[in-house]
Length: 287
Image (cartoon, rainbow, N blue to C red; front, side, top):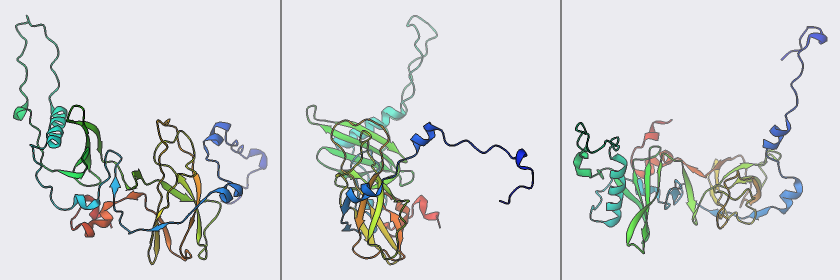
């Protein structure tokens, strides 16, 4: 903007500097000494499409589990029966208000529609082990998942978690991928073969950095892009739900960066792989 021609005395007062509270909210960037001490990780080759994805509500599953129409579930399967019971409890009508039994105008109790049986149409098994199972219905971004675990003591399947329209992340070694960004103080050059990135751990860590817990990342080298996916081993035990600080790590590329675009592979948009899945999803309309 051009300089105002009005007298200096009539100029508005400049904005006050950020308050101490605002300054506390700004993440503190690592210094050069922090980068020198940071972990130097050698990535492992990986395909463009992740082998496993997860919405955080149960077992990770292969994107191919969403291929084609859903096959009918066996209602005699104990895990499927538990799913049907869980769905029925959700769709049950609300209980009527309490009325004294001697009231003549008390209406009869409502009869659940369909005898209380919930429909299993559209549900499929996304992943299963001996003790866990993940059911899903729909496709991203409207995917609904319900997870169950087997109670060995009671010999029954227990509802573990449910999620709706959660973002999918790449999964590996029992962890969902953590997001990262480039060091804002160091712009990578085409000749660089070491990247400086700041990782934000996906799971709670009690406000601790992930130093020493960042796994060897997945790396896909394309002709015009590079996909880098980072995973962090979660801290054991209960962790407070405070925000996680960024962790500086260095990535040793097998070849110079060149002019390729860097992509964070943590969040997975399955519509990008619709041609591989052999089907159309809601996201296929994007251009």
